[in-house]
Image 1 (cartoon, helix red, strand yellow):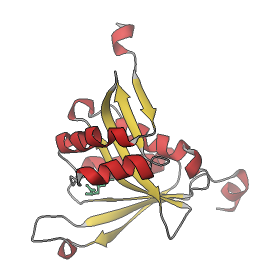
Image 2: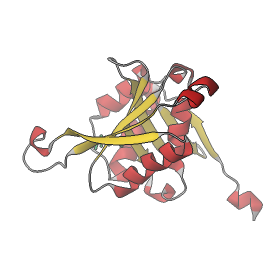
Image 3: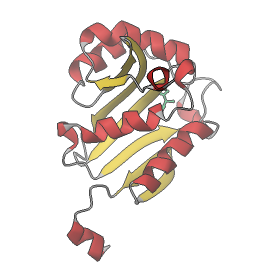
Length: 175
Ligand SMILES: CC(=O)NCC[C@H](N)C(=O)O
């Protein structure tokens, strides 16, 4: 039934009022480090230019937290990509990343970075797939070793660095 299969996902910038529901989403998703409720309020309020909410019928089903790297303004750092369990396998993670790159704040962005743990194959596939779609590189390197986390509770985090992005015609010829 075309009506039932219609895609009704909407994307928008977060507001501080979304912080609690985002915290609940990340908690329910169960695949990410659950940060404090305060941190999600802060992200939705102070980083709303680069964070994206995905919602369906008014319910938050996806969230990506991101900010321009303070040291490298041409790099957008993707902190978390959270997708509700009910939304898995529909390409929502990639749609969220595309929305970040479309934002005005990302007009000058040439690289996208994120960290992914060795066991998180779906997330690794997401970033490699985005690099293929953008016809650019995806380079990985270890960023945070296990020893940087308390106890033995956290895997290492590897940087996935995608780019250069937004190649103009001229750079395409040069590269
Ligand atoms: C891209 C992404 O979601 N990375 C997760 C980093 C870390 N494990 C966290 O959950 O914040």
